[in-house]
Every structure is written in structure tokens, then in C-alpha cells.
Amino acid sequence: MNPETSPFRPGQPVPIEFFIGRIREVERLRGMVKASSEGKFRIGFVSGARGIGKSSLASFVRHLSEHESQVAGCHVILGGVEDLNEMLRRTFDRLLKESMDKPWHEQIRNFFGNHVRRVGLFGVTLELSLKDSDLSTLAHDFVPTVTRLLDSLKGHKSTLFLILDDINGLAGSEFFANWLKGTVDEISTSRRKMPLCILVVGLEERRQELVSKQPSLARVFELIDIAPWSDDEAMDFYRKSFHSVNARVATTDMRELVRCTGGLPVLAHEIGDAVWHTARSLEIDSCEVMEGILTAAEVTGRKLLEPQVFSAIRSERYRSILRKMSDEPRTRFRRSELLDRLTGEEGNVMDNFLRRMKRLGILETDPEVKGGYRFPNLLHAQYFWMESRRTKA
Image (tube, rainbow, N blue to C red; front, side, top):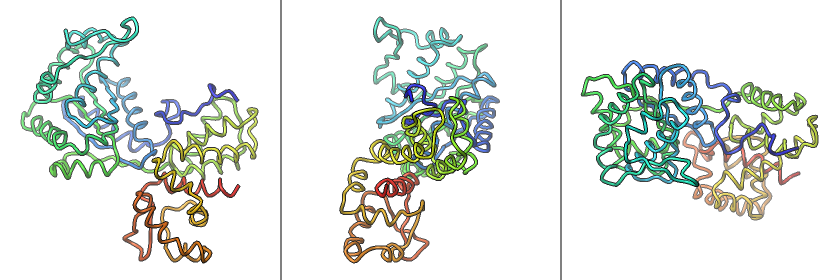
């Protein structure tokens, strides 16, 4: 099958037309944006496991908000950013770039004035050029800057919706944590309307890290935690995706895809794309579905797991234990249960295996079960099971 016609988008936020479920979360986020459009400042934190669809949810809500009301949205990916000034530069630079095809672009460009310059081949794109002193001033005067920006957009947009995504580096910054808290305090004590909604997107560990830097943030965020898809939602995703390209997959095979997905959208796209590449016609049979699933296990390990994790899993020393640990998709198990499945030789190295997995962050002690272990990352749990199937095939 032609890779370019695949309805799946591994490694990318879900296209709007394929967004599935999350009705409760979507309505809650839309409520936050609506409140901000009425002058009530809102700040939220979207958390959830890796691959659960946090970025896609934020992107979907932004799309809805921009089409339903006078909202100017900006979704900025902050991977690798550790500095508050760089975060602000990227945010306002993204706002400038995303306005280029909008009716209100001239207002944005005029607002930034001579800080805008043309870059790229033939100068076809724009860049916000700010000195460190400019960025320091922007950090200090963030609230009045946003107010002036929105004033300049009157008649076009009345609300600013900022999505700060992938904050792994920033979460350890005390400056960023204090800036967030200071921004909240400044707005709340001014008693002025502030049509601004900030949505921070990251792992729960990153929120906890921010709170450790600035404990008052614990009560600041509105928390939106993303759960895995239900089986019905995963089934709906596969049906829509295959139907969009007139491909047919038997219901029983579709159920197997759902089982392997484990409720994780990131795996749904990897598995679906692998099946698409494996298929030889639009009538996708059971063998092609299984071959695609096994291929996806290999691809998932290379692309989505940390290199040291993937290397540890692929070592022959531990593979026999891994196969027996993951006969079924599960997030926790007992040491004694695993030991009962192993040969004497495997049992001799089992504790070394468990210690190695704990050091790598793949496993952790289960505080609720004596002698128990659990996967803190749902992606690891599902991948281990898929890998065990692949190596047995």
C-alpha cells in the first residue's frame, strides 16, 4: 500500500477529523476558555501517561475555541527549553508565525514593530527578533503586554489561549515556576478582567516538579488528567481511520488491534500505520493484521522508548524472562508469580533483571502489594506485552 495514503499519523497530533472521545475533558477545557473570554483568567494543567493524547486534546480544544469565538490560539512546543526567556520568545514567535494567514496578521505584526524580520529562503517567513533585555522586560511585564496585545486585536480577537506543551526542561526551573505563580497573583490582585487562558501540558511528574519549586502552584492549576481510551473509543478510531481510505478489516481483527493498543493513541497510530504498510490490498486479512502488529512492536521500541530501555529489553539475557512476564497486557504483577513461571536458570537472574528495570524506570515497587511491581508508564507495559508476542512469533 502507498505509505503516503496512510490514514494514520504516528508521532504527530491527531488530525481534527480523527479525534476520538474525551468528551468530558473537552467540555471542561472549553469551559475554561469560555470563562477566559468573559474576562476570567484561567490556568490549567493537562497531564497523563506518555502517548495518551495530551497534545492532541489541547490542539483539538484550540481548534474548537478559535472557530466558536474570538479566540487567538497559540500552541507552542517547548521540548528542550529550560529558560523562561526562551519560553517567552518561542511563544510570541509562534503567535506571530501562526497569524500569517489570518485577517489579523497586520495587527500582530504592527504590535511587534521593528522586532519582526523576514527569514528563510527568499524571506518567506517571519521571525521575532528579541534581545535578552527585551525578553527580561517581557517576563516582568507579561500581563500588561498581553493586555496591550489584545487591545491591538480589537475587532478581530478578544481572548488569548496559550498552550505550553512539553515542559520537561522548564519544570526544573525555579524561575519558570515563580513566574507562573507571579503571573497568577498579579492578575488576581489587579481585579481587572483578563481574557487569558494558559494551558500547561506535561506528565504528572513535571507538575509535581513545578510544585516542588513553588509549592503554591499546587492550588493554582485546574487539573485535567487524561485516561486511556476505552475499547469502544479505540474501535471507533480504527473504524473511522480505515473507512476514510475505503479499507476493510474484519471485526475480529479490529478487536485484536484494540487489544494491542491498550487505550494509547500513540500505539494506535503506530499499529495502524504498520498494518497499512503490510497490507497488499484494501481487503486487509488476519495475517496482514498480525504481521503489522508484530512490526509495530519493533518500531515502537526504536521510536518511543528511551535507547537504554530498548537495549535492555533486546538483550538475550533478559528476553526469556520478559516473555514470561508479559503473557497478557498488565500493569502490575507479583515477584512470586513471575518466579513460578521461570526455569531455575532464569530464576537465578530474575532479581538482577528486576533491579535493572527499576534503575531504568521501567518498573517500580508496588506499595499496595507485598512483593509486587508495577509499570509506572502504560506505554512500557503495553510494549512489553507486544514485544513478548513478537519474539514468540
